[in-house]
Image (cartoon, rainbow, N blue to C red):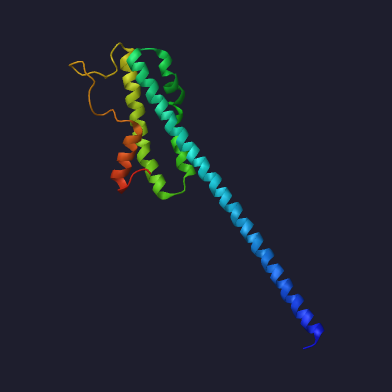
Length: 166
């Protein structure tokens, strides 16, 4: 084999390797961008879910404060989020692409509606001069029915598919 042919073959192999490495680099960078976009989407979903749970807790806390004291200032968190909670849950459902997570959200939707209805009724009872249904005939707090939403979600989701929300 002539030296010029060897050099040509060697340069061809080197050029091919450089092209291969360059192609692999571009492919790797595109996968990194895809992964970064997926991570950003997941962060948005988690932030939205955390916001929803925080809003629900704030609404419950405000409602309880109002029922205990009769002070309308406690209703501000409840009034601020009551109309947006159902819409926020729908947006979260649309953002979520995982079937199991959507099932959990499907379980949450009627619980949120029920809880909002319960809160509205107890607030209305308190406004009418009652105690918002907090006390039974003997004047003690009635047990049951007052589980916090996160526990209700976990119980309902666990009953539905055999696992908790985590």
